[in-house]
Figure 1 (tube, rainbow, N blue to C red):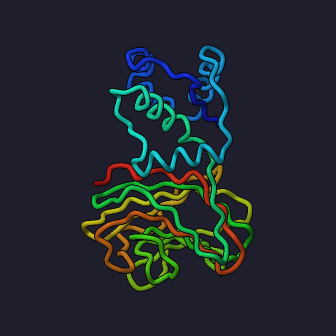
Figure 2: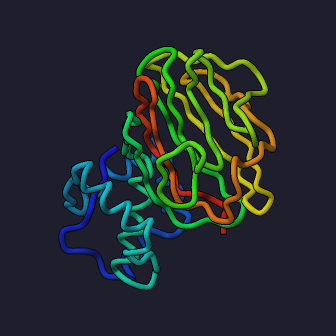
Figure 3: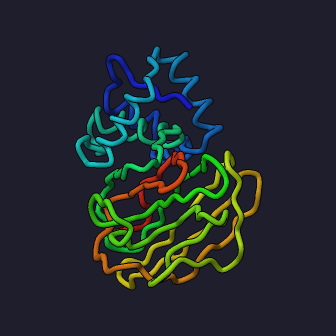
Length: 238
């Protein structure tokens, strides 16, 4: 998916009429977004953005540095832009170095989703949610893992476990979903192998440590590597 940005911009009234809120929500669906981007290019003469620029703008929106108000030209364009670029595969690679990406602080019951592709079988890579940037396992309240034995598991209070045995294969994409209950310090976590069915990894798993706020995702691979893409902003939180 390619993002598009106006060269000159549309008047706020025109933008509000062309991009009603329902349509903005709808274009986040991949197939609709692709068709919509084609219209933007053909009708309004928009220019393509490189993926590195998309990531910068997307991070600005996440951090609240660009207004999303529907009462301004910039707000209209950025709200549409955010919807379109939600389908962009912006990726991070988990290696031996600890990698952190911040997001808007959450204190309620948000849902977080992302895709992850292990580099091989029997690696050891974690993806965890935390309060602030971290560089140790013990600082991650909610964790999923491609474990060294070749299975997917998650952390439950004092150790890793899974409701069922879930093997993984190197080079296959897995879609993860966290349903967090931050006030209760628990979470449900799911995984869907590419082309497969969703499987629940954990139910009401306890956070590894108390975290009244979650605002960061941490990636780390002790063995091998892990490509993490399409991290979605938390939904339903705060």
